[in-house]
Image (cartoon, rainbow, N blue to C red; front, side, top):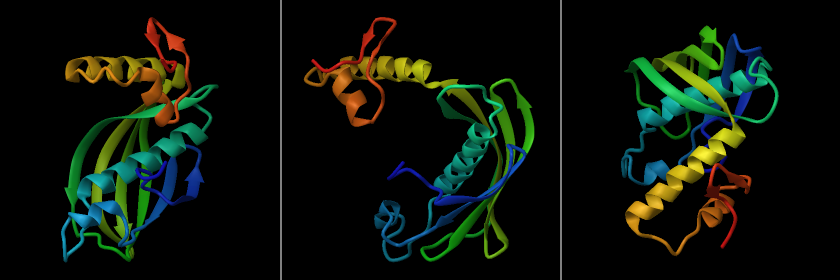
Length: 178
């Protein structure tokens, strides 16, 4: 979801075996305010994240992940190379081909292309988790972070509600508003 959704749409999908997503790069995106003033370049890490989001969409849409709501966790980046800069006005195509799948983990080879030329490539992997487990884990991490930073004026519930996650209680971590 905005502002961290780095694909505009999926244009081709063959279950989870092959997928193509696109991103229309525009000048008004927040990263261009500092990367770089006067010479905007799409950060390479965001190109890799766009590949990961495209692959994640394929994992969930394939139906092979099992029932229920899922979250996709980015696990690894290997053999990453950046070939050419991507600038506002470019249309990036993320081409992902599945290399392997084992249980709830997927491996993909990805290429980001502009006008048919490869601008970045990498092999990535992802893992799917149930949202209930992910909500519990995220709430616990936030609780630890708040305690470490002594920001006790926020409750976990307020932060979880802001992020759009489901409220509830799992394994002793309270997710409701105080």
